[in-house]
Length: 503
Image 1: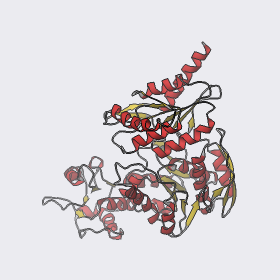
Image 2: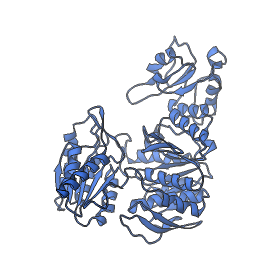
Image 3: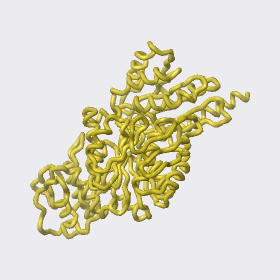
Image 4: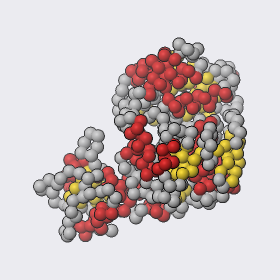
């Protein structure tokens, strides 16, 4: 399509106001080669959307974009006097970018069944479960989320949970070209607030839960929830909204959507489990749904994964997936990278688990899951990220001290902050709690050494939890991204323990 064709699509964007489009000019008949918000990625014939960011207005990069060949600029700022290409002033450049991207890639979401999953915890595991079920039903499913982006058998490193609109739409078009009939997507609060997913036609949506997180970005919990709610405001009337009603925020979402499907463990719901028991071997229970009973056999462990399974089952039955395929898909999925990933073996005398839990609620769920499985002590190694929500740091310390026998506070991704200061803030929360618990608390800034020491000092029967980073293969320290893998270090520690036991 031409640049003019694409710009005229702005007339069809709900809620978008813009200055008059030019009626003629060489730029308008130029073949459009792309849409981008990054002036470094502009090529001849591209449209550059100048976004207003936290640190800069993208309009200042318009000269570089024009010099690189941009055929048009979309901006919230007025055009400079000497501009040489069409300059469209809009009331919301992010909204314009999302819809222009969808239009440029011919709306791939309209050619697949797109399942969006939002909430604080459980998005990744729920997305893997839904994807496994759809694949078992013979529907090739693309996947986008925190751990990976995937098209069929091809997997790509995830740069962020939900990418910017141009990359998101490009990847979805690749899914369609690759034969995908469905796409399962984690939809972060950042993506919703920053309008990256506007213009996507969702075929279903899941709400997992809402707990404290990202308050460095969102003004408060109400603002955080408002971002999550946007996914359900976007849902077509016929699309099922699968909602956790054990979470207090679920009730308001039910009132918002046309086709609510509820799930819960504690409350009456459309999708609910039969009797539950937990072990390291996995989960085996029945799920009652309006479309029949589903017998679950899963290698996933713990109560939080019961919620994730209920969400996946509720979504699948409402999308018409046969019960047999749902059961097969659940059984096929061996686990999710960095989500309660047991890295020790049956030959080890301790159990070591790596998990992504990086909020106080996620840490509580992790510890409550692990506690019944520890025949002796529960040892927890964790930290808190720098340049992020500081309010959760003492809360994480309190949870760890309340539910662990030994707490090792270490670095997570300190980024630009002093790691020792972060550790001190976490430790203050732990100190407040140990007045009423018997937990011992130690600190070690070096994360590798903290993991080695925790495994080295464990006694037979202990469970060692390494929390906060999960699948991540790096640490961000002082502006540098350094190679680091909790799982790799845990394997190193376990091997050292085995060697010592044989000596």
